[in-house]
Length: 180
Image (tube, rainbow, N blue to C red; front, side):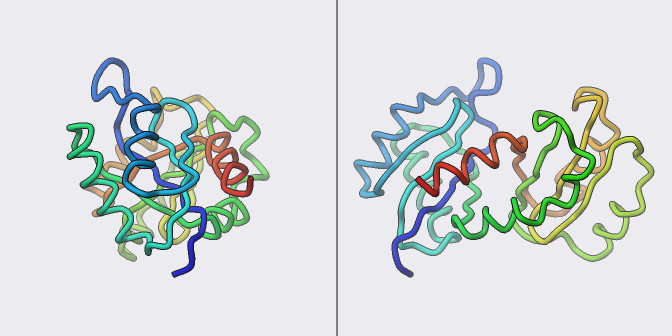
């Protein structure tokens, strides 16, 4: 695989005061391990870097490097620049999601099975909405996530796959960074 921009999403770091990771230390670690153009966005584990590795291999390597170098076990979800561009292009709720901080994309480790997808599509959650599309679930939560009806539906135990979430503003910013 030719070297291309890839986006790595670390799961569950820098939430409140637990599992703290310095983005500068993360950038230094990955640069020292040979990754190119390493940049981070916000403090929540959003990385854009250049690599010639396949996404699945890059996920495993980054998890290992972070565990060894920063003493932190975390899951990493990788999408290529083109995969992230496809996520943005699909945007199935763009006609209703008018607040990017309440429009969330859940990045999944794999596609959920057909039964789970059907159950999610049939869920009564109005005014909230969700769309399963490949390895992503798009969630519109106009009242915010605190009392969202979607929370229990999107538990990993129910989905049968691992997940991490980013709001629409972060998703589009990461794509812009990959295009710089």
